[in-house]
Image 1 (spheres, rainbow, N blue to C red):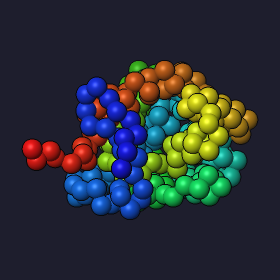
Image 2 (cartoon, rainbow, N blue to C red):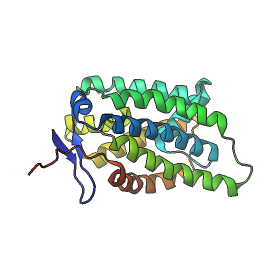
Image 3 (cartoon, rainbow, N blue to C red):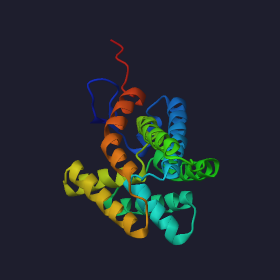
Image 4 (cartoon, rainbow, N blue to C red):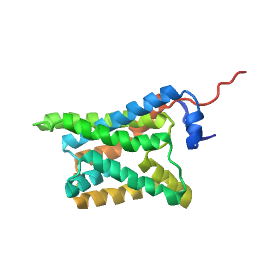
Length: 223
């Protein structure tokens, strides 16, 4: 069990195998946190979609495929998640419970949330929906990643490429998101203010909420 990410304050994220993730302790708390995080993540995606002010790179891609195929947004999120997970095979990565749950729960939560939300009539209503969706996305990311039950398929693709190629995290993450964003735009996905705001704020938001929500799995010092 090694430390994957260590921060000055808050518990560290540990590099755990799928088996270690389930044996690491505090499992009821972590499972609950994982599910809440994934449901809120789906809601946050729906809020950004209904704002119609621009989406994050992966959701631009999802929306583009939705427009091309006629499938629901959640169905596309699920299918893309499965497709990305298949790319883990040559990277010799194994998904954790949280990885599989990520694919299923977010897809369902997104479609349910889209069915409940409507596009506000005015810009004054759409801007708060966008901002709320981005902030909620950061909270949800902190919750599900902080549960330490396995990365989402897209996060795992990035970390797998970093490990296998030796490329930097910055180069790998940027390269993936540029390709996804360009593909989504060509398919008809929505770029806009939200795309820029998301790109500038999601990193600091997730970093902050990880400090709040990461479950401490370090053994207690009995001495």
